[in-house]
Image 1 (cartoon, rainbow, N blue to C red):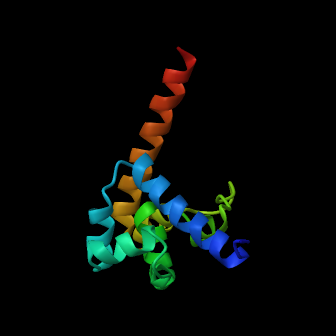
Image 2: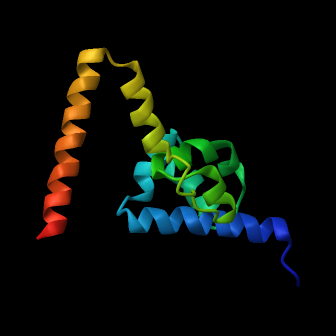
Length: 121
């Protein structure tokens, strides 16, 4: 019996989600709570009983700080692309007042200089 491309892709997506949860030491229950679903729905996805997870793909990607493309086909974010977390930080930075931006800039400069000094040792 041949597995369809759609089923292979689906299995890979669920596998990537489960793998990321394990790597990030996040319980499946935490993701289910974040999505507002029961753990039994998550278990159904895990054991190939439904694909309603596709409706939550953007939220899952945001929670795991990866792109939806990575969850679907394993495409990693390129060096020039921002992760969901980086996009959020940039949005917050852009929405802050000038004084707060200056403070953030100073903090970043301090961190960069500390990292540069540590690299010289």
